[in-house]
Image (cartoon, rainbow, N blue to C red):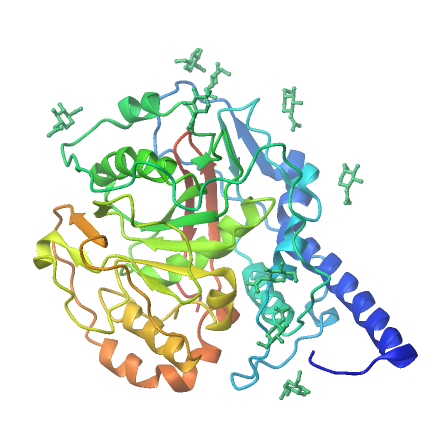
Length: 420
Ligand SMILES: *[C@@H]1O[C@H](CO)[C@@H](O)[C@H](O)[C@H]1NC(C)=O
Ligand SMILES: *[C@@H]1O[C@H](CO)[C@@H](O)[C@H](O)[C@H]1NC(C)=O
Ligand SMILES: *[C@@H]1O[C@H](CO)[C@@H](O)[C@H](O)[C@H]1NC(C)=O
Ligand SMILES: *[C@@H]1O[C@H](CO)[C@@H](O)[C@H](O)[C@H]1NC(C)=O
Ligand SMILES: *[C@@H]1O[C@H](CO)[C@@H](O)[C@H](O)[C@H]1NC(C)=O
Ligand SMILES: *[C@@H]1O[C@H](CO)[C@@H](O)[C@H](O)[C@H]1NC(C)=O
Ligand SMILES: *[C@@H]1O[C@H](CO)[C@@H](O)[C@H](O)[C@H]1NC(C)=O
Ligand SMILES: *[C@@H]1O[C@H](CO)[C@@H](O)[C@H](O)[C@H]1NC(C)=O
Ligand SMILES: CC(=O)N[C@H]1CO[C@H](CO)[C@@H](O)[C@@H]1O
């Protein structure tokens, strides 16, 4: 914005701008939540499970009815994304939109143990990304997120009793883990009971074939995160189909879906491999001013940083940072490269990587088979700084297969294969 204009002309422009923002906001709400709202009785299947055991593989076999977005996408102005023109520094407006109608969007979990929504293959995600893209060019101070009135004081900036902790890698039953954390709300959502959290963090975990890790991960992460007195949600994003694992694209899906599900929106995103468990509660799961690489010091790598620019494993990005770099690439199928790709994006946008010191950024890694590296990764990487604007959130397409809220996590299943 930066214009110094004042007086009548300035006010008029401002009013016009606000009007435009309002229109955009309504359109965005429509797109972001249209599928949920329209769906309500017909396309949202509400299950009371026959038994309480958590069952991550539970599926609704019914394939969804098809539904087209009922508004023409052309109605939405789509500002050109210009990497050099990053004057905007505040994306709180996006959250304001998502907050818009909390009462309607809140999934009522008091009545059902499980909420399943399904929708047809659609390109609405593409539209979502486009909208997000458009909004980020509109800097506004008027759109600030309204702080919820709360009688509770803010939580301590540095919560008490933080320090090194043990990890228990023993295989566990999810049922058993579930019973241990009654204070966690349905969907793996936690809000500190005695103070107002300073941070609202979505933990995004790309997932496939790691059921033995899931229980261990949840059993470790919930008490770890609770200790830090943050508000958080855990989202397990599973890839459907037989194509090679695409970690980065799943994280893009997790970004969009977690934001869609959370009425107030998340401000901070931690992208987390399921096989990494933090060993020190001083390793705060929050987003600092610069992107943070969190898993710097891993037991299986002798607690040494493999290379300076590494950004894989566990990393933290603010909403604004993630949008500014256009999310992750969607093109990395198979193991490797996607985290370096993100590093290049961040560098291109003049961010730098921050880290805790090695004595704090410590992680234990769970055992698993080594994955097959993607032979194309170097070639893809060489293109990143030229192509990232055309590869990422702005071009994300996927089929949301289902969303299930279990007690300790929200399970999102998506088919991310490219449609031919
Ligand atoms: C689920 O478990 C709770 C507590 O263990 C029990 O009270 C409830 O009846 C169970 N629900 C069903 C549907 O089995
Ligand atoms: C870049 O931002 C400035 C200030 O907001 C604006 O005047 C200019 O038109 C923008 N340029 C592009 C290419 O968007
Ligand atoms: C954005 O950054 C500019 C310059 O750093 C600053 O003047 C402006 O107040 C900031 N705007 C917001 C909304 O934070
Ligand atoms: C949100 O929805 C509720 C229930 O439909 C309605 O009463 C309320 O006015 C809406 N709030 C806003 C801000 O639109
Ligand atoms: C959720 O459903 C329960 C049971 O029907 C109802 O009592 C409660 O008011 C609902 N909560 C919200 C937020 O709608
Ligand atoms: C964004 O703007 C709001 C309102 O001006 C301000 O309270 C908030 O601190 C800003 N956030 C960032 C990251 O600049
Ligand atoms: C790990 O957890 C299992 C299951 O609760 C328990 O039997 C075992 O003693 C624990 N091991 C350690 C080292 O705490
Ligand atoms: C919140 O306060 C209650 C009552 O003082 C206390 O029992 C409980 O342990 C506190 N919970 C946390 C997470 O600090
Ligand atoms: C954790 C939870 O909400 N469990 C509920 C599952 O459903 C049964 C029956 O509706 C409730 O009694 C449980 O409290």
